[in-house]
Length: 172
Image (cartoon, rainbow, N blue to C red):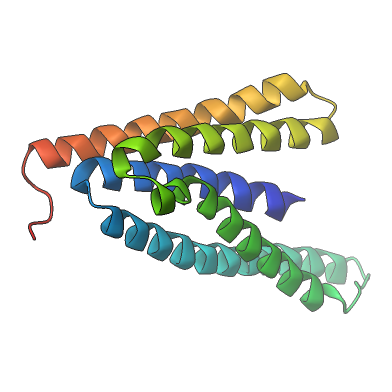
């Protein structure tokens, strides 16, 4: 569950912020889609590797403590580490496609709204779902994740517009 929530949440937020900023800065659908696909792909691999390595480090530290106490742990750990990394990569990719999808079908000026709306909706659902496991308010969990999403979109949009206004953008 940790890898699913972390992968989706991180991808929703970072991809939404990035594609919103790129769209606001360059106003070119091809660049937005290319950038979005590169970001999602590279980040999915990075997050998978990070999941594997961080879980491996934590497991090795735990095994060392158990070893010092004269206890041992199952050999199925390696399979668990790989499965966690694969789950992270898959859900990161799925999450990244949500904010990017509207740019495949709509002009940039019309894609902002659906990208932000559907990402915020997915974040709300993810927050509500994850809150249900901790016996916390689904509405509060959902609202918290959706608010994070909107903050990322606003930040990306502001940076994209500022770069465009300053003339720092890419010249073609």
